[in-house]
Image (cartoon, rainbow, N blue to C red):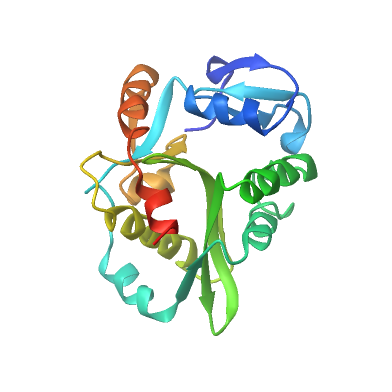
Length: 212
């Protein structure tokens, strides 16, 4: 599913990272509504939200074999992952320099994180997003080697599962696509998402892992 006007809640400038964090915690995220993500900035909350919940990730036999081909890290190459996701040659490219700078500031403040996947010491894929409590709001993922972005998602789920916390985590993928559906991402209504968000906000999954 792709974004539609029904998913757009407001149009307005980004004033700072505190505003952006408040938006995420309320179920909104920023993305330009112009061509390739150009301004003005829209604040989005999809009517039907893509989410990945504990136990829902689908790992095929071929993907399981691919796990052994790659190494991975957390927050070791955040800017490089964002740059890979922002490649203007990609279909549906929307990450502008302004947006990249915003998430770099969020990363430097400890709110945005990346999973990097390497093949032979070369960055082959990854993902990034905003994390708070037991919530990971995925922004984008990329790959230059087959299955590398899928491996990043598997490692993210392993990371979240590794923390001893009874609060269920949730990965927000914004929209469900046919590709994400094959990985176990489902659709919930905006109201269901807000309920799950309120519950998962009380977790400590990503922060607990980073402080181990």
